[in-house]
Length: 177
Image 1 (cartoon, rainbow, N blue to C red):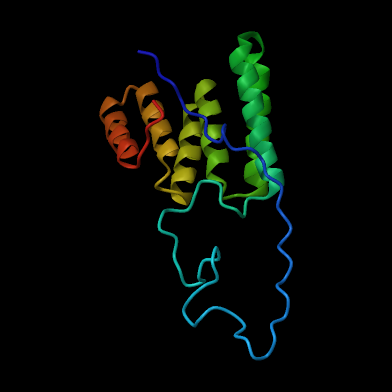
Image 2: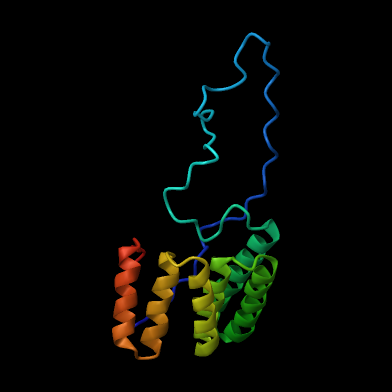
């Protein structure tokens, strides 16, 4: 049995914040200043409108620096996987970067999950579980998080719990086989 743990955020690139659009020109007094009452302008959600889906693992409020730390950590992981002789050092560097991301944004689910995966790679299972539980407290519906619970339970030979977590992962829409 080959068990793969999922690092999350590999596909996410760090995007620098864009400046806000310029304000619209002032409308003449005879024209209405905005859309009819109860409607938001096109492309702008109403303030009272709740999101239809759970919040993403990396909400828009994640500081650019934290995203950069996450990306740098993922780079170290990639190097560790490509060069097993340097894996120990690169996993340590990845841990430092994921920890920096957590320090800069304490509710950064992706950083906790990725740090947990590195801890599993290093066989530091208690630390990995601590990070998985922290990530779950932040975003309980993160499918990648629950996939990594499957990995953790499997590595601990807790097959029933691993299967329960797998069911949860699939019910949340995980399909990155």
